[in-house]
Length: 511
Image (tube, rainbow, N blue to C red):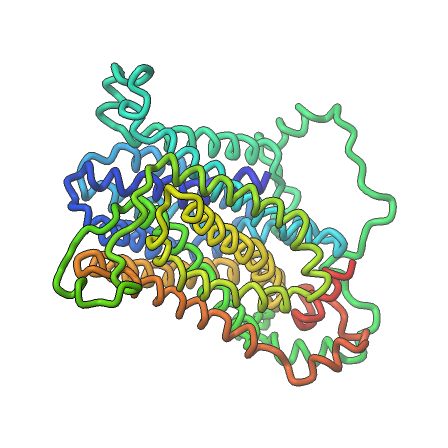
């Protein structure tokens, strides 16, 4: 159910960039200004996401995960339909803001996933499902919808040529299909998604009761010997709880417990996650624009004075359908990596170790992206180079995101603030992404005008390199001693106590 609800955001993120360059050109935007206006839309989306994410997270902790997820999905459906009716340049900017407000429930979904699967043996699989669904939506369904269904009257004149509706609104069809998938998630959530917030458990609305009645004939059994729950209090604590509570938890004026959100590890994990989302999403949103942009747009004096390896003044000049095919191949590969390679790496190197290795891939990829122009994309070597970079990026993303989710969740001091922490993660990521997208789009447009688009991709490489710094900074000096067998530290946090997130990794990945 969470997977169905989760698929909406990657479809929004990846279906729209596939047709956004053509849409902006149809709105009378000069080709050299397309990256700038695309960055405006992305920044508005990200700022709206940043502002609304803490509110969604707070609402999830206050009123429950289930109503928050369902309401956000409904708003997302409405916003997607509105975006498809863009006929003026101002309309996609405004509706991008609506989409950002409606798409800020990813933190709530991660929180619900952690609470739905409390058994340590199942945690790695549970944390891997949402990134896998993201990969499927990001690189298979999204590009297919955006590339194959946009402007249907021009792409399929025999079928849609006489249809005045799709001729007037050429960008609405892929959004309507996305809304159909979101509707399936909304209906499934109403009927079957149970509340996981502790204070709201047991509340059953009419929809949930009807869903249970409909499928009451299906025999569902829980295991006789349930696994150790993630919230289970450790048996042998030897004073550890007192130490953690003294550090993590205090009393407010009314005598109620309050939990510290901004611990050192939580802050470092938030920073690493924010930078990961920033450079990864900017790449996903601007690479289709780079691939769509024509080659050699200008021949300025500055361009002719540059070395050949810097004089890259355009993109690959591919069609939307070709771009869609590349992303689809990349997504199939990413899903295979998620199911096969990632579990092996996680067990061999641990969550943090796998995150470190994958984080070093991104800077090199971004440095090489603009040099794809030097190889003809219609030739074998050009196609091979494009695929190599796409598959390398998919490898890094597939490994990094589950690791980041596990480390971030395990850095929370209590499950009572898990929704708030994930909301803050979404908010900080959106803020960094919005600023980064605006800077990238501005530099991309300037590069097209001056005759070199190398600089924005190198800036993205620097952001990726900075994103790896917190991963190497956050290791404790006595980490090796902890790994050698201090069993009394190998416990996960619950609402009363918190072990280190390194300890949490060991329990999750050695199950």
